[in-house]
Every structure is written in structure tokens, then in C-alpha cells.
Image (cartoon, rainbow, N blue to C red; front, top):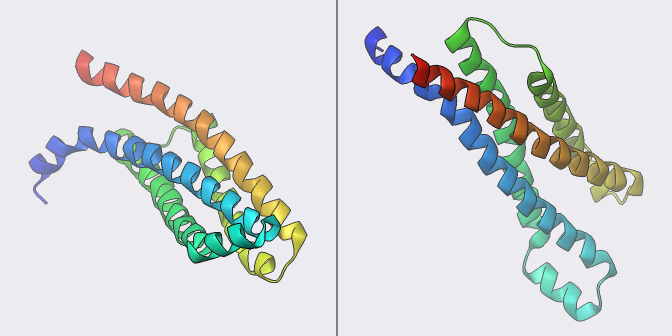
Length: 159
């Protein structure tokens, strides 16, 4: 890549991470909805249960969960890479540390899937707890990320 081309797109790299993360937050809310439907299968009346199974909510939940895992890991790596490219360093603060913690949380929540499939209730409760905590932490990350984005925009327009 031509260095002048890279310099031209370099400032705009700052926007890929926030856009990806806001999309990911929306996908996570959808996964929560699907997870609630999966949980409903175990306690629903036979007709509702049959409809939920036919709608393949469990398969959809697993597929969306896989996409979330990939996007979370790549988004975290991408955000750190763009920060390093633009600044020559990472800023170790609450946003970075919470993002790294969230990546660990989603990895653990995903790793519990085989235990849930074998009917282990502790894994199910842990999976739900981790993901609800993750969603709450992610909402907070969205706020701190917008503060960071605002600082980047201010520096772009000040230059």
C-alpha cells in the first residue's frame, strides 16, 4: 500500500471499531431474546414448545452466539490495533481493561455450551449470568467509547 494512501485512510480507521461495536451490541440484544426463547422451551406448554422448536430458536441462538464471539474478539483486537497505529501506544484505562475482560467473559460463556447441552444447570446459570453481566458492561463501554470518539473528533477538527 502506498504510504500516502495509508495516511489518507488512517484517521478514518477510528470509526470502524465504534461502528462494529454498536452493531455487536444490537446483535447481543437479539441473542438475549433468542436465549430467552430457548429457555422458554423447557417450561412451555406442548404447543408453544413445538412452535419454538420448529422456529429453530436454539440453532439461531448458537449461530448468533458464534458470530458474537468472532466479532467481539476481532473488534477488540481491531480497536487496539487502530489505537496503536494512530498513536504508537495503547491507552491503558477503563475502556481497554473492560474490553479485555469482556472478551474473557464471552470466551468463558461460550465454553460452557457443551456442559449446558449435557443438562448441567450450573453451566446454564453461569452462562446466563456471564452474558447478562457482559451486556451491562458492554452498555457502559458504549458510553465510554462515545467519549473517546468525541475526543478523536475534536482533535480531527481542531487540526
